[in-house]
Length: 367
Image (tube, rainbow, N blue to C red; front, side):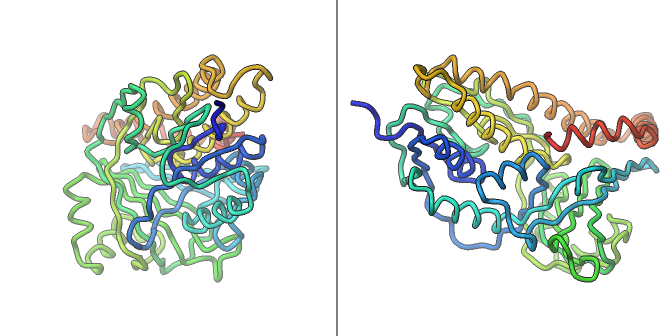
């Protein structure tokens, strides 16, 4: 007997929910497996989404409203010995948008509520195709014999929400210093009041230092953070809890097999220094939906030849971003003076190359 579902998506995170909406638009019957909600804690995550991700979420009516998506009109990246690169938006209205995760999840849930072809499940069900979107801690990969190669960075990302003394003016700041990567991302919406005083923090530090930053008093944390940011935005004040998670480079040896496929962090995980992790996952969802849309009428959704089209189309982009983020992280983790001279000279040279910078901006947009 034919399965009741065409596709079963294991994992109801942002990538899984977006994929469910895309596939339902193709008139496929979708089951979305959602784990029980964890005990309530404030969610301090914010993602930098590019133009391609915005277009995708708008297409399924899940882009957050103007109060929860802040355009980044300029980005300043600082090295550890005077190196500096500045990016400005060109024809596009923004380099990226810093999106509040709870607001985005709410919009996705609202869209799913009105999508009759998507059923929310408590457990996996039989389907022509199973898509694993459980994140990097997926327990389902092993069922399909997938090896997940993990290379820990020995770092943790510390995240929080902040208030800055000086207005951010829709500018994102990033510092590479002493092996650490500090990013201050503007928040407050499309038209933040008085130039904007809300920030999202992502601070990549060594594991021991990460533990210390989580345990220390709020005043001590704020002082260390203000000093690390060279007081570019004045005094920084915590407005949320601090959260932390380990950083790693990870990839699955296979992304698909007969009747199954991986997407998002279940297939790949990168360092957050470029802010591209969720963009890669949403691009996976978009491509898988496109491949299923373009399939021959006689080919079932779980056909291995079909799924390999998806795998081939995405692996090159993902591997290129892996190489970029991993190379930058390792380059700035070196404390030898020769490495410092090379990387900072390189940053200054890159900053002077206008056409190359514009090419990089277009690549990052995902368009």
